[in-house]
Image (tube, rainbow, N blue to C red):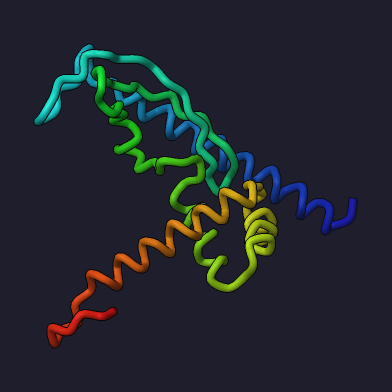
Length: 155
């Protein structure tokens, strides 16, 4: 094998080792189980079940097993999601940060290519577009609420 071939192979193996270390870290955190009933300041959530989700990190996909609490007509609460700061959708905030940073400079296809080259992660174009659009919406809200030091609002 040429040195370049060895480098590429070692890079893939290194990413896989990092992915496995992240997987072990997540598993060591447990499932977020808080007992048979989760009681919040406003409600009791008596229904408990174990769920699994997959999260795309910069090292690849990991599996997260988490306890979900709920009550009829209420949104489920997953304590581990909050502890790990998991986003609503699959890609981690670090993956999303990299997408948004690149989307400011490049077309979506280029963003996807650069993400794959840098991390080995492949995401659908639609996911990349949605992440960039949601970040842009947050920027508008940020600037709409921002008040300069002299009291003038930016518009």
